[in-house]
Image 1 (tube, rainbow, N blue to C red):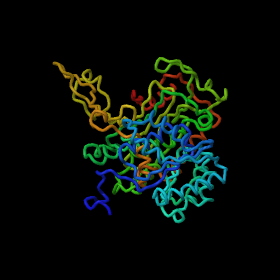
Image 2 (cartoon, helix red, strand yellow; image 1 turned 30 degrees about the vertical axis):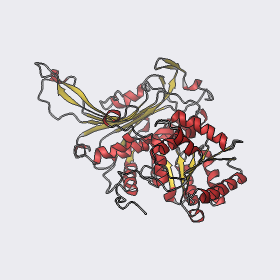
Image 3 (cartoon, helix red, strand yellow; image 1 turned 90 degrees about the vertical axis):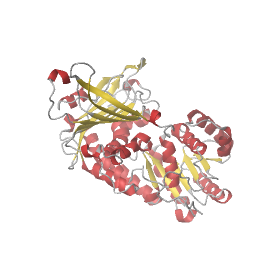
Image 4 (cartoon, rainbow, N blue to C red; image 1 turned 180 degrees about the vertical axis):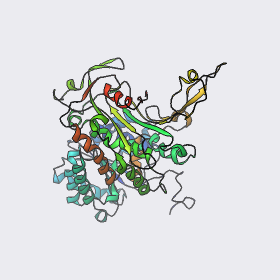
Amino acid sequence: MGNPLRTAQDRRLPRIPEPCALVIFGVTGDLSRKKLIPAVYDLANRGLLPPGFVVLGFARRDWGDGDFESLAYAAAKKGARTPWREEVWQRLASQFVFVPGSFDDDAAFDHLHDTLNDLRDRNGIAGNVAFYFSIPPAAFPLVLKQLARTGMADNAKSGGWRRVVVEKPFGNDLASAMELNQLVDSVFTPQDVFRIDHYLGKETVQNILALRFANNLFEPTWNSKYVDSVQITMAEDVGIGTRAGFYDAAGAARDVLQNHLLQLLALVAMEEPTSFDPNEIRAEKLKVLKAVALPKDIELGSVRGQYLAGWVAGERAVGYLEEANIPPDSTTETYVAVELHIQNRRWAGVPFYVRCGKRMPRRVTEIAVLFKKAPHLPFNPADVEMLGNNQLVIRVQPDEGVVLKFGSKVPGTAMEVRDIAMDFQYGEAFTESSPEAYERLVLDVLIGDRTLFPDAAEVEQSWRVVDPLEDAWKGTTPEPYRSGEWGPRAADELLAREGRTWRRA
């Protein structure tokens, strides 16, 4: 019997999933160890997992359940966001199961199928299972076909719900994305497919919707009459790490622009949904993505760069071509900047400058809405020399919060006006720290809430933006920039042609 004091619309009480299992393919990989296992522990520590919850690890290891528990213990203790409580871990670890095997091993998947059937009866999970693909994209089709062969993806056969979580990148161009969408939607029902973009799990990204639609302060000025331009920046201070094989084949545009940055753009530019229903939100985001227009001259309206050796945070950094396992003649970009426009009435004429890059001076992701200057200033020109554009800056990471910049008089006898900032920080305004993105997303998968997960149409439309860029860049060489710089000089010239400059993040 449900809580008689609670309605379906009441989100104040914590939502707890039905009894279920989480199967992690590639459980020994970096994503699983650094993000998924700590997220599961933190959810358990917050009392948000159901009784009988089971974690099954699947990987090519000759392990038993105890070996899996040891790996998970080390990963959870290192990555946990909430305080460590041994009794919580012991309760959780007692429900860890490991199934060894490779993705082409029919017997291993038959064993996984039998194990889930045993758990359905023994742990009372009623056939409810979420399959998490923490594996290279090339392995997706093979695993999907194994799940289809064994019937593990079939809701009717399982007696409960079966869901699948697919990590980005979802395909490497429009054709491969459409092929993968068709495959995954033929194995699982479309409403049970969760395409994960971890940026959408961040509190500050979700706060874009609250900021816009819960306040009457911003919406009247959120249009081309008042907004001069929008800058979306995702800068990383690290290089490619151990991802050489993937990164050199993908590059910055496929790795970040196609998913994270276009999703941020859609949230900033979308119209107000009729409700917070997942389908309504996705419908408005899709309208924006369909309205995105590339520069008429892609060569002039975009910049791609590749980092050279330099210094980042006082440490020597090698160039991209000196990284391990990178071909010495690689033309893969590690930096992208592009001017996009949105062809609708709200945003006509407003440029959206989007940039991402590695080996930048510091790690920062932010969205800056720059407003037009006042049409008339009655002050002496010398008194407003230090006055810039009003700005609303949403800091996604690492210093989560919102900054509002506007002009104010400097104390003194003269009427001198300069920019000041009102700064809201999550860590100071709220007593509870923000959950890690994967906590929210894993919980939403287990509950079945698809609000924060792009659907197939959004993924495919994003590729329709990126594919023409990739086609135009074929045969070109990226602009060099030194590690520790904010990208190639051509990126500054991209904005300077319109009399603008990049905001200093």
